[in-house]
Length: 202
Image 1 (cartoon, rainbow, N blue to C red):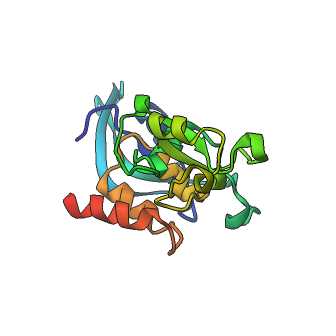
Image 2 (image 1 turned 135 degrees about the horizontal axis):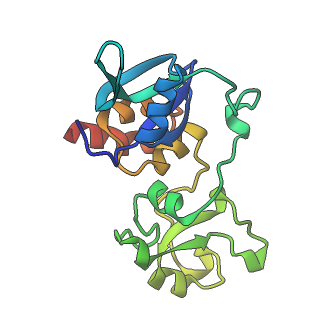
């Protein structure tokens, strides 16, 4: 069993990944009988109160992936039209904490969001126009395009799908959760190789 900081992946009944929840929220779903089915490995065994009549203590085994009934907030939206909110945490994770100009790997505090086409030149603050850049490269590029600055992008920026975004939001994604999420990535996802590499190390 893992420590209580490990997140549980919640899906809808069709298996579409929805969000990460903590063990208290997962236990509440089990208690309210809102877990349609579970996947993955057992994460926690939570002991509750004792039944006054039988003396038996309640026990909830929380699995790493739980499916819940109810409305899927993505229902009716095509996979292509979903755009997750843009923030630096998930942007840096999308790009593997690499500066997409010099190729160096840095901690978050040494990284920045660079607009490939600068905002001053009409560029948008959108996933397809932003990359992770070390502060040195970002300062060097300034308000120029990569071509104008004589810099080459090492990868093409992309907008994560909802399943990819859920993966990027995860704090410590377990192997069974990775495999489950990977099955929902587009076949052309740039994240495939990275996640498969992580799985190979488990």
